Image (cartoon, rainbow, N blue to C red):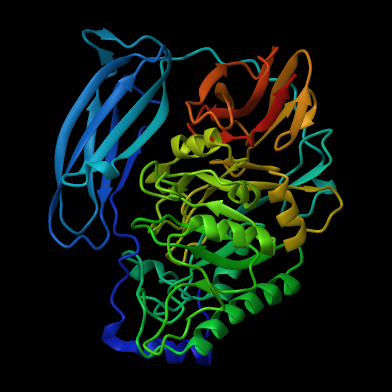
Length: 535
């Protein structure tokens, strides 16, 4: 379903005319790196893509790319600069497959990119992806049988054997014409003027369901419900609040009409510039800070812009659950001057961190988008700050291709026999029973002494971590990484092991562990962590 009739309320709001300027909400450097994991010959080409939506004048992107050996040492460096002036620019960077005069030895290497717009170096973007050189040895994987598909709902992936859960695959971050999304793919050039595009939530849910998703969240920008990115002097608060309620009703109705599919409606709260976006999945109230010329709040509940500590406290009081969206390492989610800052209330309510997104303005309808952004370093900083977060991967769709830009999905584990609903979804998020996969046919579950990922427990003696992987047909594991960190240390997450089954005795104190698996096609999966207090 690609069309929908606009409700009368939305039709009125669309009549804002030229005053509805294109959103500046996404005015930041988008820099992505595509590094083919395998190469049919020794040579391969890395692709750098740069965009800056709404850039007002031409700028220069300075970039650096490094090829890192399996032992962590930099083998090669490339540097350059690229002019950026209003549209996406790509740079092809060929590599011969050699280091110096000799072919690069077999192994799993990393390609890292660092890019910044001149004059905005403090907002630099760093991306990194693994590649296979030659034929590195494949890691040994534990046996991991899937339950028969007959035991699951028709649209859900098989749950892992011997674990009483069903896996549901979702895209937990997208927009429709209730904010700056919903454009027809053929006309979609970026973010839309708020409330101006043809496709709303009903069209999004129908499209995602047809695409094979089990869950779609329409997460609309909370400050666009008056039809403007900023405050409109003559905005009608009643219309803004009614539009949010219409979105909730749309999701509720679609879920009732299509059992086995969960349509959710919520908001993406905040702004990018000196802010940070986060999703709130289960609020029946529209939150905001904007007022019209009469001082009337254009939302149900006032939440001061940029005050994340206060927002976390409100979320905890209301029982809401959230996700950090495409987090940057600088300038976002600031509390008391500290970016990515920990608060106890924030730890209680923030359940997910986006680790990978396909580009928000992808027009792919074939799940082949190569522009993807990587946020594991920022998510790790949040984990090291003390947050208890599972990883998610979403598409942030602004065009009418919900779930179709790439094969990435967020996997949510619901107890077997429990109906997929907003309540069971929120309960799974609170338990951190979630994994992120770039391959919709693969799943990853970490266990620790038999306990499920997402759990927090005390341990004495040895600890055995097992990365349980079930892959798409014909897909194998190329690399395993068991990662280790210390909550509250504000240090660096490091690799503990490259084995799928790892037994050891942790040092006394607090720890978290998660698994990252790279398939032989380059797609990556992340488990949720476990949090262990070693006695």
